[in-house]
Length: 290
Image (cartoon, rainbow, N blue to C red; front, side, top):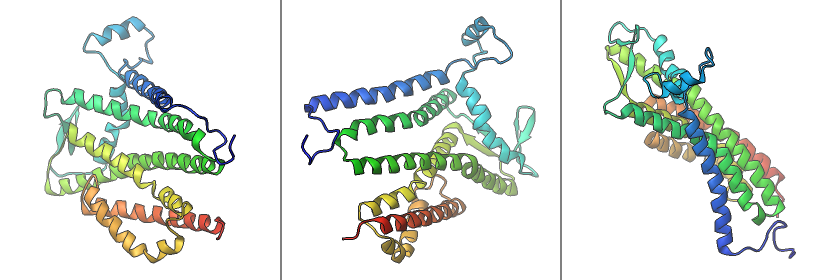
C-alpha cells in the first residue's frame, strides 16, 4: 500500500461507494422506522397480562399508544409543573377535575393526530441520531489517516454528548422556565393561557434543538483551533464582537423571541464560549509550533 494513502483506504468504483452509503443510511432508516412503530404500539398494562384485551383495545376507544403515555408523563407534566407553582387570581381554565392557568387546544380536525405523528417522528429521530453518526463514521473511516481518525473520534462523540446534554437542559430547565415566566405575566393580567397543539409542539421542539446546537459551541471553537483557523488570542481580542453578534443572532432565531428568553440563551452561550476558550488554549498549547 502506498504511504501517501490512509492505511484503511481501498480502491472501489464510484457506484460501489454510493451503494455502501445507501446500505448504511438504510440501516439508520430501519432503526428510525422500528422506533416510530414501537411508539404506536398499545401501551402494555402493568396490571394485566391479558394480551387479547390489548389487541381488542386497538379497535376500540381504549387504544392507548406508547406515544400518548410518553406525552402525558414526560412532556405534558412540563406544562403542569409550572402551572402548579403559579397562583392566579383569575383566568383559570378547567382541565380534568381541576382548574389551571394554562391549557392546550386543537384548532383543526386532525390536529391531535398530526401532533402525535410529529412527536413520534422527533423521538424516533433522537434515538436514531447516534446510529446515523456511527454509520457515517464507518463509511468515511477508510479515507482517514490515523491522526484524522483520532480527531474524528474525539470531536464527534464529544459533540454528540454535548448535543444531548443541551437537549436535556432545554427539556428539563429552559422550556419549563419559559412557561413559568409566561404564566406569571398571564396571571398578572388575568389572561387564560391557551396553546395550540402546533404552536406548543413547534416551540417545544425548537427549544430542544436550539439548546442542543448551542451546546456545540465548545466543540466548534476547539475544532476551528485544531485546524488553525482561530487562536485563543484571536478569541480573546474579538470577544466583545463575538458576544454582540451572537446576541443579535439569538434574538433573531430564538424559538421564543422575548427579551427574557434571549438573555437566558445568551448567558448560556457565554458559559459555553468560555469553556470552549479554555479548551482552545489547551489545544493551541499542545500544537506543534512551526
